[in-house]
Image (cartoon, rainbow, N blue to C red; front, side):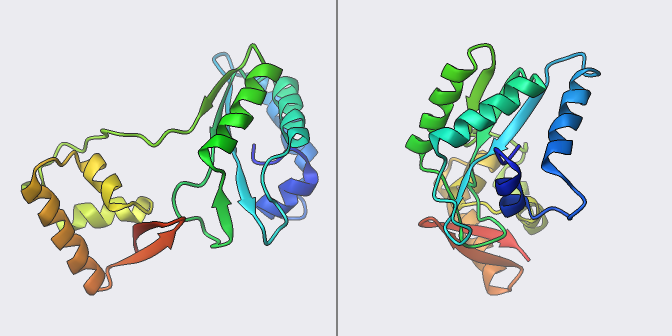
Length: 193
């Protein structure tokens, strides 16, 4: 659920002309009848000055809350682009903006669990860097762009030797044009071609 109405749905998602926002919402409402467990939604919030989206207004939050209530979601996950998006003009909300939206939704929807994105830490792949291959790093970077610190966290690296070896492997892969460097929001990300 990335948009509060059909206008923003068309701007953000650029759907096929036959896809109608209201049909999606009504389809989710119909789905609610068949889901026995918890029904959750992820809401991606962003800025895109090229499209005129300068943030999330109180009116937008109210519209989103009405949709959440109508469909019957019990849990929502607020997210914002933390990795480089497909279009360079898309920007994430600042943490304070994301927190503000979260607090408004909690107030508007007291019976809905509202969670905000926090970058996961300590994910483990079960390898030490000595056993880690270039293909492992490329595989991680094919799935999503990562900062150096993200790779350190995902790979659960802690020794200076492991950090130096990871830096060497990344530099080799960049120089060989197997992975590329992307700058986004003041951070450096790596992504496989």
